[in-house]
Length: 107
Image (tube, rainbow, N blue to C red; front, side):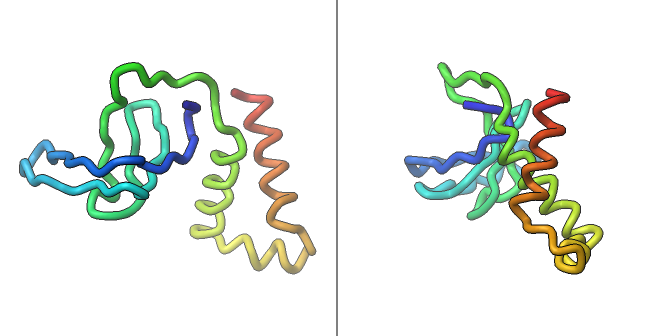
C-alpha cells in the first residue's frame, strides 16, 4: 500500500469512536485514503474517521497520482481553479500531471 492511495474495503466491519464510544459500520465498498496515521474513511457511516492499519499492512512509497488529484480537488474547492483552467484551455489531466511531477521531485 502507498501513502495517498485510495483503497476500497473488501469486508464489512465496525469501528468505535474514541470520545463517545459510538459504534459505526464500515461497509464493503466504502473507500479510504492511506495516510501516515491510518486509513481515513471517505464515505459511508465512518466518513472522516481514521482506522488503524491491519497487522501485516505496510506503507511503501507514495501514490503521487492520487495525491496530485487530491491537491487539485482541494485547490479547486478553495479557489475555483477550474474556471481559470477553462479560460486558459488547460485540461485537468495536464494539471494533474504537473502536480504529480512536482510531488515526484519532492517526495
